[in-house]
View 1 (cartoon, rainbow, N blue to C red):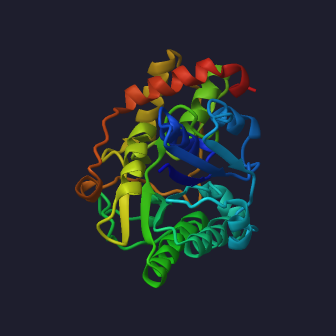
View 2 (view 1 turned 90 degrees about the vertical axis):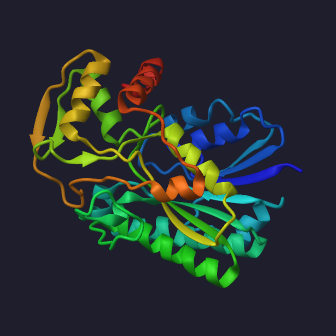
Length: 325
């Protein structure tokens, strides 16, 4: 029997990597992807993401907006039984969420509500949800454990926390196994163009200054895409409890100054830096405790930052005609 995965946001950065991994050499795997090609960034980049498997007979793409697509409509479009849902679709970005919080509620909370209703109607047991390290807010109890007090400071972060709680409700009421994975700054080939590593690389290659918010001391737990995928795939198979929240990070925090230095070394060119004020909604530091992920999922990140940046740069150079536009 073929395993049928429903991957929402499957044309995005993490989603397309997951679909590629699921389909790679697995004739007994079927993937249905839902993506609305949100104009937050270029549709062309998302088309590039799925170009390798778009014509695979085991892959199908539904261009739906989950915020406005009901469970009944999804049921009519997806007739085959689904084994696992991996819900990655979301309106991304901390800073933009401050400008338009309602759109984030609609995409990230109502969209999740609709896909959970679909899971309930179709009796789909396994549901993996992409949460975010942003739910921790400003918290100096490093490294962050999953049971920390949560004080989100942006509408985006609040929607992710709401998503975790909505999943808990459906887990208790409808016996859906809901695994919320808190991602920590995922990077690698295909990374979204609004994120720092992609933006900095593009600016340096174009000879433009890069924007450094604050004094460069802010730091992030950067996690390479292959390591994140290991955690996601393990979560699709996890069956011990019905509700879990699990950090997927690298257990290592890198300052903005350090990141810029790493990127300069990989590219072989120094960056011109434009210093700007710190931005509302940005947290000063993220740092994951991953002991729970190791215990429950066998999670073990392996990729060092310099190695991951080199792989990202190779991908960027390969597609630079499109990416440098």
